Length: 413
Length: 134
Image (cartoon, rainbow over all chains, first blue to last red; front, top):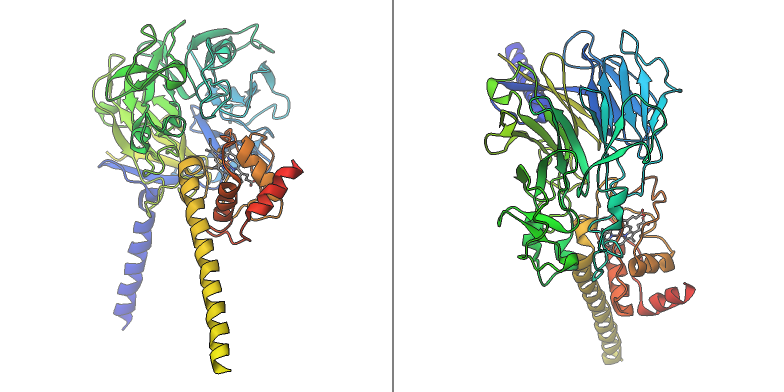
């Protein structure tokens, strides 16, 4: 009897441990995951310092009234036990280098000073580096990254779907030229150390990007890479041109290498991954076949439509197997505009790179964020990948902005 | 006498049947409009998209009494970014200015009685009154 109950207990234990295995994620062989933190708030982008202290920028202040959360795993068990925070404004971007921590609201970028323990010194008096950027609800979040020289690159998303005269309205034409592009729909470059900059002090670095949330500096190519969210609702506005099934697959979500002055073609064209062409937008007279904007960039990688790439990270570490070195991880939020077809995304993808160029097909790296019921409705998703960061030991961290989980993914030699 | 009673009962039954049928037909019409014009953003489960497209399921305004506001939102679109049940949504809602009064009534009846929502059906007369309110 005693033995039987022990056996039962063991079964229950094994079962519950299994239920938690890899924090519910599905990973390639040899990888494991822990739930580094949970319920911290709407964690958008994350950054990690050289001591392994993780910072998350929240979209809205959490219950504790914090919008930047500091997480530390002092005992090294893969779970942060020291969690604190500061800041009152919502936002997306966060970037840490040495003792400097940059964080963005939807219209500004602030700079904080950290002490030797990675604790913030000036929580209520950061320097304002950039201010008064357009924040007009749609695509308002400001993602940031820096180059080695200390220039800061900021995404200013277009406050529109396809630059129609009346946004998201049936039959409304595209504006020619699109007036949004002078102050949004691209990447702006600023000096990372100067205060109180705005449009006049910055420079439109690249244009024709509807909304970029994932961006990273690539040290191999010494250039900026971005992932764009393609336009929505081709079937809603042009039901005779695009079926629901076509809308679910068009246009591709895209990755570009953006050099100064580059144009990715929004709103005049979108990228069709089947024809492998830049197709003229129907708002600008397109019919699903006519091409346009010959001088605009072609994407380096085309992903399935509407999956919403939220973060891009080039892997620099040595912990993961060699194939991952210098490759790109992309966090996909998960789609909504594939409905009525099933939603997709809600995973972290990987693209292998060699010498600064994609060297193979993209693949799913970490999946299962939406939860085990596989009911991929945006509201029902258990977690929606949003931010990525690489720890000093080469572990990969993934943030979730719906319930506020942080996952830590490691390779077990 | 018994015959009379039978007649009345069957009359009531027939009337009831037509009532339910009518409602079912209204719901069916509403569903069709929802699927072509609203589902893309508000989703099949009425849950919307967190931070982006407001949920209609379990939304206090949707099952509430301000029918004029609902009619206005559907006809003219919506992009005010005020807190809805405590949350903000970033997207701009597409207007449907061409829906007829009976279509608006059916669509409202549908969103007020789908998923976990349970509220009164909306009649054409109510839509017309709502339009007058501006």
